[in-house]
Amino acid sequence: IMEFKGTKGKWIVSGRNTNGTNGFEIQYGTDGECVTDHVYTIEDAQLISKAPEMLEFINSLLSESDDIVHDEIKKEAKQLIEEATKID
Image 1 (cartoon, one colour):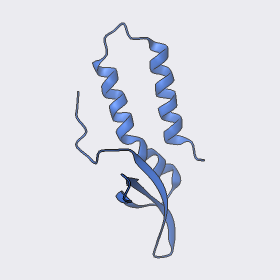
Image 2 (tube, helix red, strand yellow; image 1 turned 135 degrees about the vertical axis):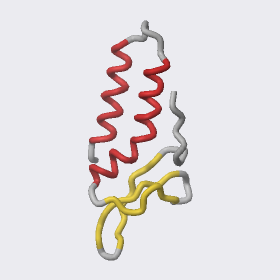
Image 3 (tube, helix red, strand yellow; image 1 turned 180 degrees about the vertical axis):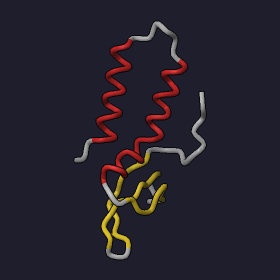
């Protein structure tokens, strides 16, 4: 299993305007610190924000035994993909 060495915590997409250009940033924690300070499209921002969760999920798949319930894996994978691609 590979350990994520990047910024810990939940990453959240937030709107941002940089020099008159609308875009998005990826924040973590409760103090508004950013993983990225400007992403141009919501689709890219949403995908970036889910990267740590995707890595964690893939690592969990690698650590499971072969008798894991496949329906549960499919459900979690679909949920993660939806969260990474669904724009509210």
